[in-house]
Amino acid sequence: NTIKHVDEGGIEVSGERAVIEKNKISIVEDGECIDVDGGNAEIVGNSMDNCDQFGVKVDGDAPYVAKNSVVGIGGYLIHCSGDCANGLVSGNRASDTGQDADGFVISADFNGLRVEKNRAERCNDRGFEVAGDGMITLANNLARDIGGDYGEACYRVDGNGGHLLEGNSCDSTHSDGFQIESGNGHIIRKNKVVDAFEDGIDVGNGVTNVTVSDNKVSAGASGIEVGVLATGNVTGNTATGGRVDYCDESAGGVTATGNKFDTSVAAPCASDVD
Image 1 (tube, rainbow, N blue to C red):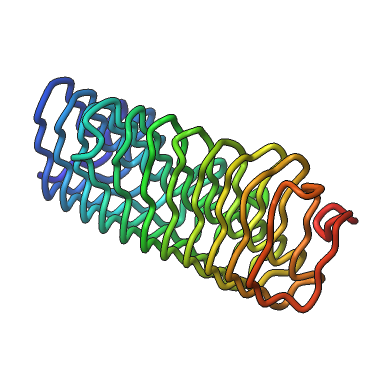
Image 2 (cartoon, rainbow, N blue to C red; image 1 turned 180 degrees about the vertical axis):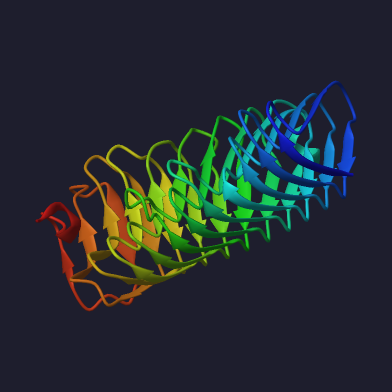
């Protein structure tokens, strides 16, 4: 189907096992291009542009969102409320989002949701945001040219799910590559950051039991920064190009071993200094 110039949403479905496939949706005012409330939805191969809010919004068990493209305004808002081990968000693209709009906003109430091989490009806010009490795996995604409005990160991590971010890339951001804002037990492993204006990886104040390992980072302020009262391990990373490669404000809460850092300091961190 082709849907164009509509006032209040493109495709809206409430119910189980909705299948929305290979539609073209363009210029939607006051709503989402695709909005599904219900479990086991399959949203595949749709093309969307200039959605007033999000391109794809899904709330339900085990969502399957694959090979869609969203250009302009909003990206993807996906909440897995159950059976997340059978949920997958893969092969999607978001580009040229508008003011205050992320590429992908993903949350889960239960463990197991996978978000992999997606692309977020030229997003005015964050490329990817993951949150919730269920563990989410974010793997092999790309965020490029991120944060034009307010200097937002390529990837932001919140929640207590112990999320795994592995094999992702950040290529150019006005802020941090990976911003670990809150939570417990997150693993940030084998990711790559190129041309981050602020920190390559920023572990926020009070984040606990974090593991930051085997990442490669090039950043303007700190390569890797860990905040006050943070705990965890920083191992096997390489950082270059920053005013300082590693900054630790945790006062011994974080252990750093086996890294390649030319410069390191305790405080203040480069991003904290005007």
